[in-house]
Length: 395
Ligand SMILES: Nc1ncnc2c1ncn2[C@@H]1O[C@H](COP(=O)(O)OP(=O)(O)OP(=O)(O)O)[C@@H](O)[C@H]1O
Ligand SMILES: [Mg+2]
Image: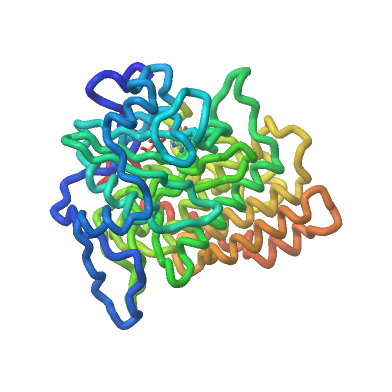
């Protein structure tokens, strides 16, 4: 974590940039009538005033994190470093380490381009939305050049750490928890997409799915979220933002964003959960760097799917369960956005998988495969996928 204390933090999102002129062009998260096509605009003051979270002073957060001590760092992303801290549960004032409410304090890297916009967007959405599968925002701080966000601490860290960190301390996440976390994240996304919320999250990835003490999965990081299309519109036009390896191909090529773009990214996460491989891994041989491209040929039959299941799972899963998860992923990864399921449908499919874990007679993989177009879809998608490749150097 040494770089947290140098002037730069690593940027894990190479296609986030901050050359925006519509800094305050965040639309109201309270709902508009469906006939209102243009999103009402909120000023920074309105966003901060309407957020139901605390405004902290910089000094309070300094005290809560023991002066942002190096050994308080719990993570680091494109926005900046994340520190562990403690607050009194009722007064939300700094308290002794190890007592009261544990918090995660995200401190904007002051040289970051995208920072202020993402900071405000996060408060705009998380400051008002509340759901068991969304991380809770406790408050924020804006003082001089300091931008900070304060969240409830998620004790088990990110899904990314549980899937990809190797080492004796990190045991691979067991199969039943992988299914649970996938379902939790799907519920969070389905809530965002539902009426009247209608928010597009735009940054679904394993590092943004955090786990609390009971391994409940919760979505964090709303810095790229957008209100979905209104009225007759089927998409919103945006600057292309997100994370390589997860973004939907049509979004990458057109900037047209709708809820089905999130569904695609969720499909990538399902593949990560199934294979234990990262969406984009430059340490892999060139042909295996992009998970979706590498996995697609294996997603055409039950026998082949079983060849790519994370072998650290050993005998924890029934083959038909892995096939079922893969078939849901294939649907989410359809090249044609309209062929992708809604998150509501994904929740139902994952719920059914979870309810039947360990019951070989309850799931008929052949029937399920057929129903989900498991064999037919993949070929078409693969062809389309190759027509529009994307990668680090695009945008
Ligand atoms: N509320 C939290 N509780 C516990 N750990 C957290 C919390 N928020 C973030 N973290 C940790 O900090 C890490 C960095 O989070 P952050 O959201 O800043 O970056 P990221 O998601 O890894 O990458 P990116 O900036 O590209 O989105 C997370 O992966 C997680 O391990
Ligand atoms: Mg994150």
